[in-house]
Length: 494
Image (tube, rainbow, N blue to C red; front, side, top):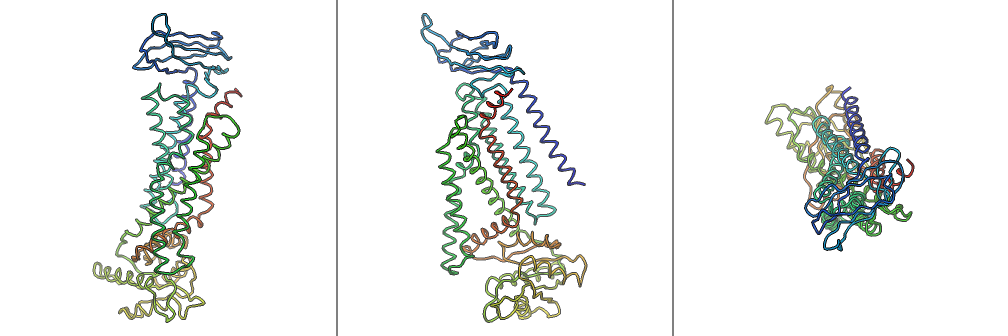
């Protein structure tokens, strides 16, 4: 019921913003105020109109270094308007502009094909919609963080909140500059900048992308030097290459197609490609950032000391059947929590070392961990090894069966490596297990590559959801990138 109410509130809020924008555009579009630089600071002007029955133009007044003129449509039709600001003896000094005006049947006044009085509220509507999306997404993130942190919705809501928020701030800055400098910052520039918002966000984030890619590459090279050249040790270099290629492509497209107000087929197609690539790239950029934030939060989180079972997630054992450093770190972290819980509460949890036996392993991961726990002083009766699982999801499912045999709705804690906590938590929720997690520390050069592997795993596991949001993001960016063309074509149809 709460979920349905929240969706109703989101849809209602979006519809309210859209209706407000449409109404204000319809009202303000019937007049248009043009601001012309007035270097002479004179109030003298000349207005010439090819058909005064179509449009009326009035001099409003001079402010600072510009003069404002208001256009009002009288009847449907077209007219050319020349405005001159004059000064000097015999009015020899002139400056001004020439407009091709079109008045539609509904009274909307268009200048130069795409410019109209309602464009301010069009930009304001986009601003309100993006900020509303950002606020709702951050509220969703806060809700999931408290009630169901181990969920891909946590990553998605945080990433979407940051993405929509930065777009909203860009539009706020655009509107603010336009209001402060109405004469120096004309509508052509407004539409042009609005069309490259996502490209501008990419350009602003480029220094951070470069630094991040360099750090990933350095750490990944260190990992290969220490651990050897293997497929699983290449994720950092892979993401660095994707970031580099995506950055170059976005920069090239922005350089090739910087114009968002041209109506030539080449420029329209170019702006669509530029907006699609840059918006998808920036969306994935924020998704990567939100994943890192969630993973770091999960790694630092300290669960409650009320656990009935501590599950230890396995990994490949050594050829002699002993745990490698990575697995040993997970067991030691579980033992540390075990001792702290007994010290703080007196409650003694049991262990579920979880992991099957691979084709190149002499013993199952569960049995290997059991032997290590016994050597560490844990009674065998307090250890319930799970030895059939092959994946993390199976770890969760099979361990849940063991825990359910001894206690219904038991509190279960899983121990893994710090970078693996968040995705393991998501898989535990899929297995019907509401478990908390703790993580063992790992070497500095291992963490970044492992994080990238977890990020790719999350993307792959929720590929359909990500595809839907990428399509929505690309669609929004493409419409905004061609907003002047859309307005112009719409005006011709009315």
